[in-house]
Length: 472
Image (cartoon, one colour):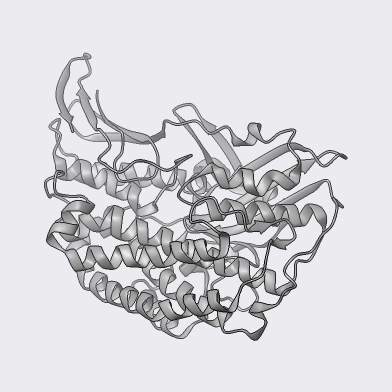
């Protein structure tokens, strides 16, 4: 038996590798996704005052700090047993929507667009964001503008684009000003234009990627996302719901600590990333997916006019749920459009400038759970405190953990279709990486410097001899 190791995976947020096992005939018989960085935040926060948790948890990641900030603040609200002011909730929702916009723009335009624009089989020296800038400057510029739109909203509300501290237990630290609202609203038409043009372009490209549609983690599974009574897209309020591949509800109205009855977590010997699963079915049969694809499969309406039109067209892809993880890219663009439209609605609310934006209270519960839809999927922060308000334990269930087993399914599916010999072909290896990028896993604990990450892939035969190697 031979093993192909892809280490590290490029154009993702964090450090990981893939191993692919071949039999004596060169056929793929196994493949695994390994996360090679360790996270220690669940231990680091023990003994800290619970009020410090939002600011501390925002430091988990430089890509999606706002998501951790919001989920942590919701858990602290639960500990204080307060209902935050209505305006504070709307402002939090705006910040979450801005985070979705900037994160999805990063994933689509910076990390995945090189594959769509330059081709899965293009030279890796060209197949990157700089290659897009050279050959498709308008698309690159639009991607930069769209991400900048989201980041500027985060900066306007939170004071800075990375690790903002504006979200606090009980609400937000200070109200929105009229000039800030007007500046955000003035920028939304351009952001909508860019998103709609990207959607039209991407829909026209799908036919060119039928092999990828078939093999990018395309299998029946359950989906998990937030839900509400209106069955509309929900990213901040609601409860958790599991549905199956036929859109039937499997479990519903899951709130607070109830998640522990439905979501199991398994440690892996070959990865620092846990695998979560639907607990009643166990690890093998309880695989599910979260994130944009799950959210669009879950909701019957986006809740905004333009996004509703796109959602109706998205639904035409399949009779029941959309199963190919290649369509995560499509779903991200629809979510960007929804997020911009929803921010417009919230910012035009007369109460958005209210001065009442924070509730104050001491701990009234020894336990709190905050649940949020982060860009990559369902995020859960669960804290227990002692009578002095110090953290005794914390459990963080992140979107990439929810998707871990589905990613492994996808890696195996793609490798089986495209890796056909003991020779390492660039196009095949890129597709193995691309199926991981479809999920947009976020593994990083901090931001990364610009530039290409090194890649060293070794193909080792059954007798231990290296038969091929690729470096860049």
